[in-house]
Length: 329
Image (tube, rainbow, N blue to C red):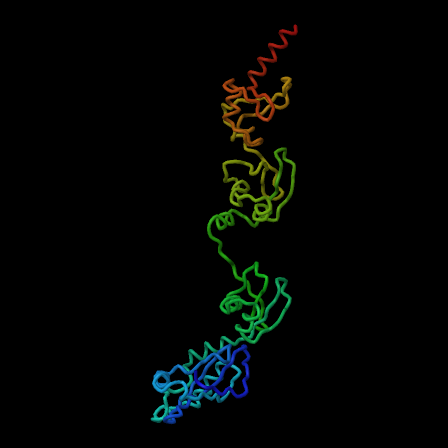
């Protein structure tokens, strides 16, 4: 490891050390000058030039001394200082290890200047938290990626971000997120509109601010609710509830019932009529009972009493009722 004289360290505005150094070969007196930027001062850096690295490998670390000449506040400044310290005359000097002049091109300097642009952090309500001198300083404080902060400042923040970012003295930007899959489909169906939830007796239960909110609270598929609300679904209800647009009364499409469907009577153990259902499908939709089992029970193929009730077709019930009346007479 090369012996290094650090002098008086000075940290830059982006929480990094930017310095210009000189490495001297104690055997032949040749030297090398360069710049370095780092978060850790003692990182065992010993230059990156081709000639200096070959010379260190040849003569050994003990024969070289590294002196830090100047500390700078930012990376663009250290580029400019290197450009002054490593000129064309220095490169032509046979005692110089440098192969090119110091500094960097306009593109590199522009990139370096953009990395130290001041940014401001806000909470989710838009209240200012703190202003940082650079992306790096903000990223170190919040333990996040610099590119994420840069994207939030340039393109805009995501709507659900807990921390909002913007350039210093600039307004907070938000960007629209295109969702993929089923979410994108139900958004097209109107997931951001107010919807009303009714029970099967057409009593209003609650008005939801959006389909997404209702689906999240009830753990349902948003696309199924959206299809019912827009009339594109196969059924008029979801989760035993009727869904409509806000302030639109529910209207059940009676054509959904098959024209040859038979009405079904629900009886208790004493053969007392409780309710007459339009069809076995209506029972299936409301009570979540398999319609095939209801049909089997009504036709006499099964003697199973589902939910503790007896089930028979309305025609059979009327015949049974007429028979009981005739016996009584």
